[in-house]
Length: 383
Ligand SMILES: *Cc1c(COP(=O)(O)O)cnc(C)c1O
Image: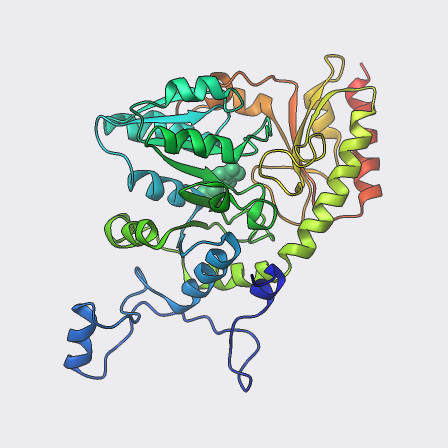
């Protein structure tokens, strides 16, 4: 197997060329003759025709993700949600049923509860750690859809076990692997059929790109590429793909740093008198599920005497914001998602507590981050 750092850092460019690949910023690619055009249209030749389909810069990103996930192929998309919707729509049709685990990504939940519902697809939610419940729900289902660890509660699930249950029931399995990245969890080797990522998070890593990717076997990814993507048009732009290739160079180094700081801060928070619970999988449960490590996103439950709003507003280095996986530390309180409008409310559906707060640990100095949390917890406790 090729070491991941080589996949991330080398692009197979000729020794006498640039060290960084160009951005092929073009919508179409011309032909030298009708014969060549005809051969391409007839499927006898593979080459770029139009960037809604194939673009060399986007392809480079796809090849890197396929190599990292141990997949035969990968398809990049304009967002993580485009990866989720394209993957799921390649599997389900009217009358089908999906089994999903609790605490999936909020917009995946809303997609299931609105658009998919209109298309006649039903979704049943189960506790992914309760294998008896999953097994009982699976018969007759087309798809098992899950995340590990889950969003907000960060529960690490037994990926191999869940995929075995899906396969036993004749259902396909799709996992959202954004939190772990291919460096910390390789779901295809654990029996998953498709892996999706929000590349907007760690893969890009600099909070300047929204993108997604789907990885799996050649037949299934090819089916999405030829029978779903051309019509939905969820293409990734060349500039975004180039930024992702650049982001991937440092993925391993960034994750090391995120993980080290997150573990240290999670340990100190667990000992802090204002904290009721810390949810960072991998640290609490070493070797858990399919994870070989942990990253830098986790949540904490504050004790009732801490005012969540005052705590969050008092933070200075941690900025209030959505998303995660970038260089900057972020805080997001569950109470804003409990009040969220504009569709079915995932936080209320999954029963999130208003005292839950999500922390994205960035690349800043760990001691400064800890000092910031300490002073904000102190202010959150003052009445
Ligand atoms: C952000 C996120 C997504 C959606 O990705 P976008 O790139 O924002 O569309 C999907 N899954 C998880 C776990 C996420 O955190």
